Length: 65
Length: 259
Image (cartoon, rainbow over all chains, first blue to last red; front, side, top):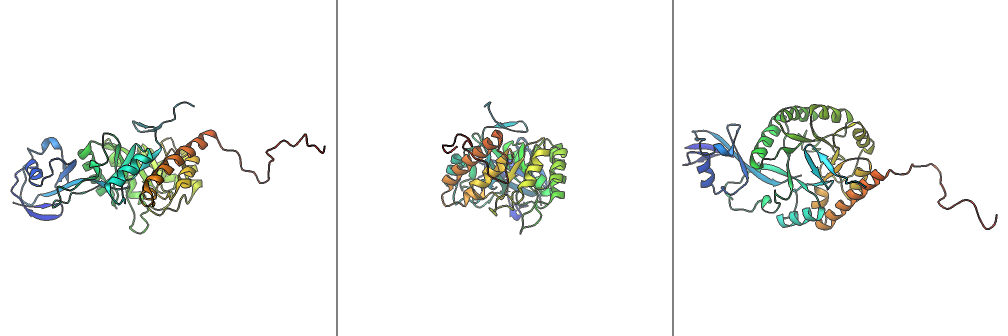
């Protein structure tokens, strides 16, 4: 399935956000996910089923002033 | 003296120095300088994860969110919508409700776009965020941001990263005297005396990043800033002497041996 992940087209096999995060090796990170401009609460990662052409943003914290 | 704490929104701090976490050469230096600064609050930026480098170290491996109050910022946002999106994500990531809102006008000056800043602040306050807001050194805008419900107003001393000190100390003073929320001088502080000056003028705190991160000895400058903020605060509380046009002798003017 093709999605837009952090601005880039990606072909993924994950069916929900939980799987996507595990597939990316990000499960231990403090991060947040946005799907089609809406924040996905952590409690809904497993039940948020990915769809073709979803726009997913995964963000974390970096140094900044 | 009774305990002098820095209260902002529902939070309370001992330190009046807020530090940034940008521009350091590595995470270890970020950690050591932050510790040396005595700061309890540290700003962070929200950015896309690099999905091809999942195993890489992260800032929060070095800056423990249990030890520090993490203040997510909206650096790099040029409109209200992006700023609101960014902070919604930050709140979900770490549960943080105390945030630093900054909406910039252009990349050359990094001056705040106050129109978009006010728009974003209105939305964020409604959504329950405690907004510390970066703004220009304009007393009218500062009052407006307070009316909107921001928990702290953070006027710039000078442009971000410029290290030029306080361009308009009179405005910082005027902003402070009119405000009922804490005033934090954010941006422009270049060295310890700038930080001390900000607190002497009555600013409740100072937010400093580049001046520490770009010092030759980051940890030593972090200590200097810690001490300067403390000294400035004490001088403010002590109440400075008036400035006079002419001299006023320090030794008694009677009992001279030639009288």
